[in-house]
Length: 277
Image (cartoon, rainbow, N blue to C red; front, side, top):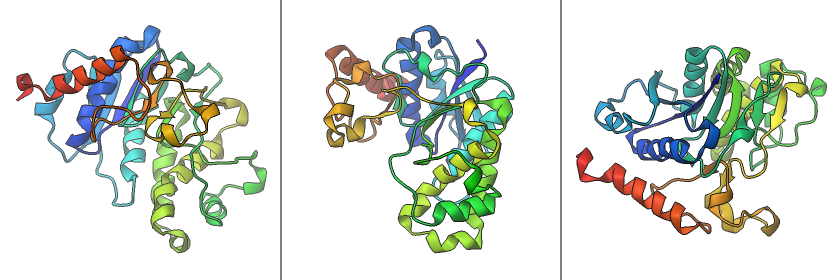
């Protein structure tokens, strides 16, 4: 199967989340449970002791170059490195704080598709989109309607499409461009990487090559209680891919069946266990 899973770590602290993701793929991803997971780690960080824990999980570790200081610069740097390594084939990209609770074939791309997306939860600041389009050389009027930017946390892409390299280059160009500085408060700095990703996709891709990820992909378990009832999942177990971090405690902010809860606790305990010390 010409497909890979991929994620990244920004620091050693992220590796426990990568460990949960790797195990969730092997245990819950159905027909994709044998697909390798590529984990991109910073070139400046020594993680040899930690990554030994992944030996039996079909994980490929690789490096991404040191990213700039702008918020979330490491995301596009890691994805661009992944694209360059894979060269051809589909990649299911997952945030460092994600797991796969059930089969996720909906994240696969058809032969004609180049990018599968989630929409970001927030709108970009007024004027920022138009300024970014101008710098990117994108005719805003020629684009099909984009009501919100794409999420940079979870998507699928074809490596041969060159979207990730374009994203990284455009993100760094926008971050350093003097015409963007008037938009850079704390909020807009955080959203810039998603604006850059969206423009990198739209710049070279036809609408027919894009697809939205289905319901219960990229589900924000940390926001479950704040979501409208009609969009809430009954329990975590029915999700296909989910944002989830155990860094602040194992229990998710939503209902979860006992077997999955025990699995989460067990994997966290396993990662932190004495046999790794």
